[in-house]
Length: 455
Image (cartoon, rainbow, N blue to C red):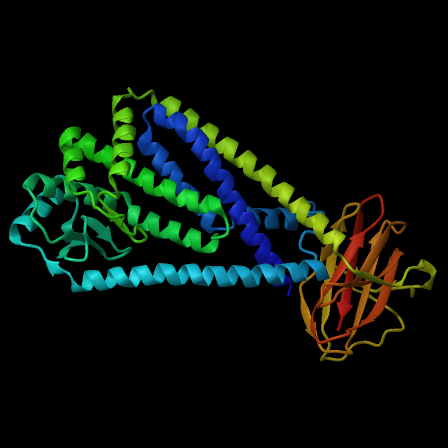
């Protein structure tokens, strides 16, 4: 069940990475906003979704560990009974919470799909205004449908792949239609619906983290700021635009899971006006200044994430060591059977003279590990039935170095022998399940350990 440890660490580390980047962005973003770079700020904010949805830090640490074996002392994902039990509970709770959140998102998505399906085409005058706006923005009207419905209280874009502008069935002035379509088409051009749906998935995966809920709220706000900024810059009439927005502001707060309404509530419109007017009044600094600010943001984010992930990895390693259960079958080097090296190839195989050559049904696996002091490694898992003999043989250089050689049991406990130089032992599987062969250097200097195991 080591996959539960890997999944737990993947979830926690990905959530930590997304949280750190969100907080760093929030601080540096204020500087960019005051400099008038609202559009750049929003694009940077959307990049953070990559780190909420993909285990970038986890994969980077795995690559580093496999490359030099030093990232986690080689022990980060070593199982222990306590660690396995904790991670099983975490995975169970996380799975239940993720399913509940996903059901909620799917329910809302299905509702709006039904609304779109039941909506009616708009009249010719409304359609002409829509086509004129699309032509003005050099946007193909084929990329988005136009419908009207009684179930919408405010103009909005719904969907993810097949986008539809939904208009409430009511009378609009030509000015209101113009700005409504200009706003919604700008959302589509920015790809805000895709960003919103990705943010929903981040909430599903990291529902336990309050920062992801804050991130989604910020994404909602800044997508509106960026859209308003572009609309005001394009039209050149800030007052007329916001008068149209206020006239279409809904009385009740709409669900924004999979839609982009033109306005949510009056208080939100006020904040949008403050942010956008502030950016429009600022004389933008040079592109060099923006590039330096972005470079600083990336450098600060990278260093902060690296420090946080390393600290988390070391903490997990300490927890693993504190909860480890080890069974020493033999500890005296003189009691260990002497091995003779019969091959000198990569991942050399050391076979005990007294051990009978395995039959064709047996499996032989080789390993070659270089371990620094207090470091360990384990191989790929293998499945055996209860009572199966697992013969493990290894040889270390220099021969004076002391190390442990053993197997990790399905319950996370470790059974090992301890010695130096050539070491071999036959372990017996106490139960049917997945096992791992491992080695741990407990000497004060690095060891090169080559060996094999047969089962």
